[in-house]
Amino acid sequence: MEELIYESFLTSTQIVERMVELELDPRVPIISETARPEIVQDIRNAGYLVINADKNVQDGIMTMKSFRISVDPASENIIKENYNYRYQKHNGLITEIPVKLWDDAIDAIRYGAM
Image 1 (spheres, helix red, strand yellow):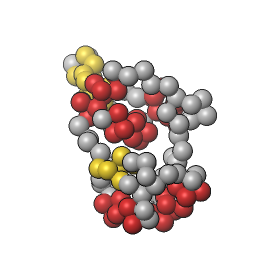
Image 2: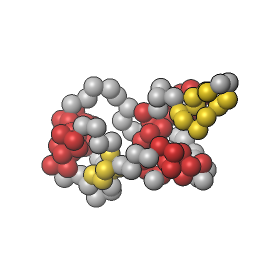
Image 3: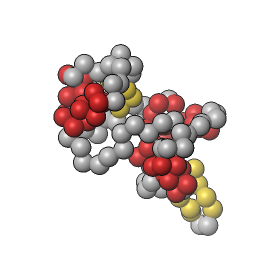
Image 4: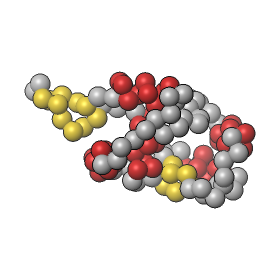
């Protein structure tokens, strides 16, 4: 995995600008979060191929566990999230349910794995 854009509060215009600056190939599918459909549509309107993510967390985690995932050493946010990623505890036992913190990049990787 290589971290390319990891910024909060970007507008759709800023996201597309970053993608153009990085010279991302518009034919390569982007697996996208669907919570902000207007941003997804703006990216599509800019000519990029955007596919809605399968957001099934449990299936995604199981899929990720089936791969050996390498992370570019310069991808500091992915590394930090992976270090801090945790599962919920119930009665002192660790469950299969992740804590919704430190998961933005992990979610994106999960979407791609699915």
